[in-house]
Image (cartoon, rainbow, N blue to C red; front, side, top):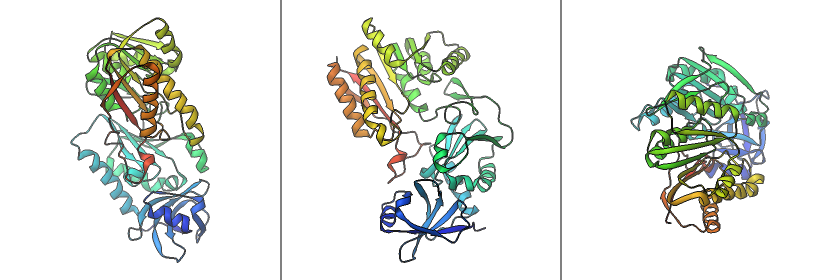
Length: 393
């Protein structure tokens, strides 16, 4: 069944943007929108000669007014959306794994702009982050039930980005009954997701592979800064570490680390409720040393205006970590700020190493996991950066 749609006429700027392969077309690239009732939904894209170029989600209140869905010859309908969900699932299964928790749909990278679907065991937590995606909720949710066969679906539509789309913030049950907590596993470790109240959709799933990596590298004393639920800390404690310090400023996250440690019978873990910047300074003054340090801070830059301050923050936090890293130690440092590019991240780390008078070689540069795929021509999808650095002295 074909879905109703408007006609969005692109100007030359919008046409150039479409031809570049980037899936976002800003308001400045649109000449006018015609033949609709003013509702959000799907728009047919036409150039200034009225030639059909493709189709997109339409969000009238957003600067990102159009999010490209398909080309001229693939008209959006229920069959297309079902196929997109099936392809998203097939992509993840093509890697031969079915983890306990994973991201099943990653927006534009799976051909479903503004749609996020995370799975915790057999419970789905979804986000509709744009007005266009929200308008198709009644179509997409039944298709998710059909394709993914979940026990429940919870809508975590309380992220502030929805305000830019003129959408309300809400947490709503969409299918079945979602429990307040869901236990899932990372290898042999047990964790608890909080679908209604946890960060993102209840937990951070993009660092699972790096948690495993740190567990493999762990030795001696390990420091985990910005620990959140303790993914890195628990992996290190269950791996080869003699002792682990996890530092987190959120009281609820501290309680979650402690609960996760108890559930996994981890004894060699100290949880500190404190600010990582201050804590690292204090440990330097006390001349403490750690064999492995992990830094996974929240996004310091959510837009271009915040980038200069973020650069200072990333340099400072890594400089302080480098100062207390033992000779021959390993620093695993991450950034989830898209605005901090790969090259800028390397520049920040190089500057920090210079000020710390330390020399490092790059042991690994892990990419995002395959359930957070990177879409070619869409640099915003490549947001997570990680460096595993080894001190030469």
